[in-house]
Length: 87
Ligand SMILES: [Zn+2]
Image (cartoon, rainbow, N blue to C red; front, side, top):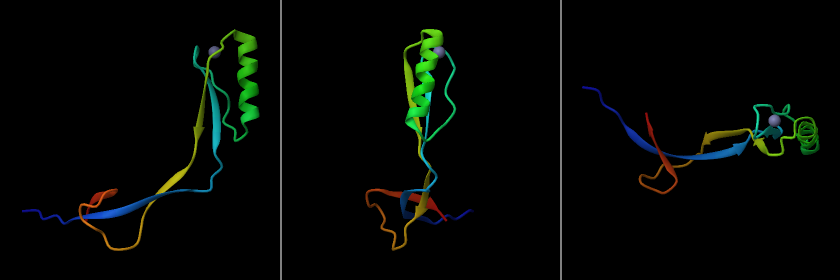
């Protein structure tokens, strides 16, 4: 028989410090800008793409790098915001 111990852990989510990047993606075709942290750069790509193709709808996709880590302190069973972990 296999035995498992279940506990509840408190997690936090923090930015990693990696700069946020943006992409503009055409809603009509599969083309998209190169990733850039600069909104002006990806905006210029969208306007150039609109001028060349007539495609006018775009999605701005922003990526932020996050890292989950366990918080110190006692785990509390059943508390809100806690995640069940298997040890
Ligand atoms: Zn397009």
